[in-house]
Structures are given as structure tokens and as C-alpha cells.
Amino acid sequence: MTQKEIQEIKGILSEPKKISIIHHKNADGDAIGSSMALNSYLNICGHKSNVISPNKFPEFLKWLDNKNQIIIFNNSSQATKLINDSDMIFTLDFNSLDRCGDMKDLISKSKAIKILIDHHENPKKYANYTYSDTKISSTCEMIYNFIGKLGDNDKINSSIAEAIYTGIMTDTGSFRFSSTSSITHKVISDLLEKGANKSKIHNEIYDNNRIEKIKLLSFALSKIEIMPDYNTAFISLSQKELNKFDFRKGDTEGIVNYGLSIRKIKFAAIFIEDIKENITKISFRSKGNFDVNKFSRDIFNGGGHKNASGAISRDSLSSTIINFKNALKKYKSDLN
Ligand code: 5GP
Ligand code: MN
Image 1 (cartoon, rainbow, N blue to C red):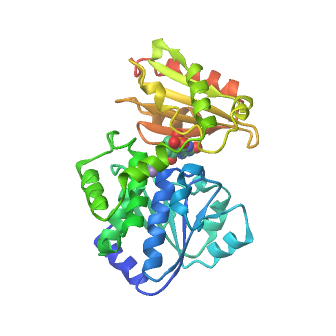
Image 2: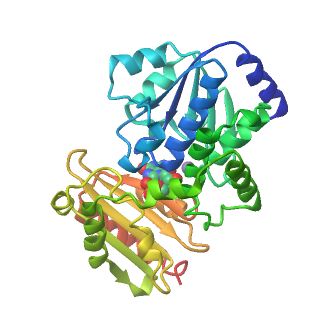
Image 3: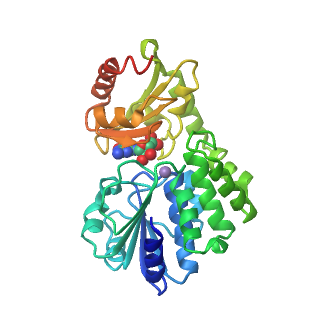
């Protein structure tokens, strides 16, 4: 984003605006954190801003929305009206309108000024202003930069700081992925100075589990399959299995990473059956040079980042796994 564009956005925001903030389907810590941080900032500045989420978001993020302000789209007339009446729409943490579910058409038809802020590769050109940087750890870190570029770093209060901290922490695997830069740590340092309570955030996100979720994790780990020829580990969970553990959205988040904690494993995957949506949700993670963004795009029409990607398969759980195993053969040399 150029200095000229920043000045233009500053000009637009110099008068009160009606603003919608949206993020991707199946929101994660970065999507909710960046949306809530930007929403609080814009409201402090005197705008009428709302966050609209394409679908339900996980329980462990509810504390970021303690006033219950996030609107779930659900094709509701309230959300549709808010989007249609918006002067501006911010789209956060995704690179293509396909990622915001049923809101896609409304957003693309809207005459509002659109601003994309995101760190995924290959952003589509649908916005009037695009702030895209794939080297930055998280959309939350970009929101921190964005507020700073507008000259408002001092408007970041403790609750905005905690929302931003959350997305950086979750998207960097608690500051360990290669996307964590020295600048990320400088941002974190400033957020702590602004009053973010790191122990509280960690506790809300990681130490706030339902027992069923932990039992599901234990079950999932007992099913892990290793493919030694490919340094690959994967887990699959059928809807029937999930139901046994009173499955809720978000319960499987992070399970895929356990595959990578096994010695020699470079590539980990999880396949999750969703009977209601008639899909298999896939997550990929890797270590080092194996590019799971490319793998996901080439094999399952998905995407993401080099070391963390995902996709939706319209095939059954078992056929998806067969496709996956067949695809591994093509990547054998990359995995060794
Ligand atoms: P997760 O495995 O946590 O759902 O997603 C990991 C990364 O892959 C995220 O950056 C996410 O944006 C991306 N991703 C997940 N699912 C999809 C998908 O269906 N399509 C695309 N293009 N990217 C995805
Ligand atoms: Mn993100």
C-alpha cells in the first residue's frame, strides 16, 4: 500500500462512515482478532462499524467478542442490509471472495469502497485498496501496521492490543513459525506495553478446553498413520467418530500439528468429514521446504501458505484419502 493510498484512505475516514468488516469462513484467531481490533479502532474514531462472520466461529474465540457484537451472516436480512448500506467494506485474512461463503455475491456487487488486508499468496484484485504482504506473520500484525500508517498507534488500547496479540500468537504457532520476524516481536513488545495480558490470552485460547475436546484429541492421536516412505503423517476423523465426542467447531484445530512433532515427519495432514456440508475438510502442515500451498492447490484446488494450507474436498472421506495417498507418489523426491 503506497503513501498516496494511505493518504486517500485517511481522507475517506476523515468523516463518519458505515463500515462492514468481514473475514473468511471458519474463522480462526487471526480472522477474529484482526476484525475485532479494526472494529474497535474504527468505532473509537467515530465510524459505525460492524463485524460480519460468514458462519459460526469457535468457542475459544468468544471472549474477544465479549459484547456479542459479531454478526453471523446466515443470509439474514440484518447482515444483508448492513453490507448493502456500507460505505466501506474491509475484507480481512483472505485473498479471494470465494473464501467468504454465501457473502461472495453481495460483496462483489457492493458499490462500497473495498479494502483488502491479508497475508495469503496470490490476492485477487477485487478491492479498491489492497494491502497484501505474504511475508508478514498475520493479518493482525498488518492491522497493527495499518493503524500505525494512519498515524493512530496511540489509539491502540488494551483490548485492541489483546485482539491483535491473539491473531499473531495463533498464526505463528506461538511465535515459532518462520513467519515470525524480529519486527513481529517489536510489535508484540508494543502490544504488551499497551496493556495486552499475555497470560490471560494464552489461558483463554489454549487452556480453556472442554473435556470432550481433549478426549477427541486423544482419539485422533491414537489413529495417526505414518507413511515412512514419504515422511508423512496423517489423521482422519469421520462424522460418526466426531459425534461420539460432542464435536463443536474448532475442536479439531491444531490436531494436525501433532503429526509434525514426530521425528523425521515433514508433512502432516488431517481429513475431517462433514456430513451436513457433504465435504471433507483438509488441513496440511509442513516443515522446511515442502510447499503445502502448492500441494493443496495442485491436488485439491485449495491454498494457504508454504507451511500451512487447507482445502475442501467434495469427495467422500475415503476417496479423499485415496487421492491423497496417490498424490504423495508424485512428491516422493520432495519429501525425502
Ligand atoms: P487451516 O488448515 O487452519 O484451516 O488453514 C490453513 C491455511 O490454509 C490458512 O491460511 C487458510 O487460509 C488456508 N486454507 C484453509 N482452507 C482453505 C481452502 O479451502 N482454500 C484455500 N484457498 N485456502 C485454505
Ligand atoms: Mn491469517
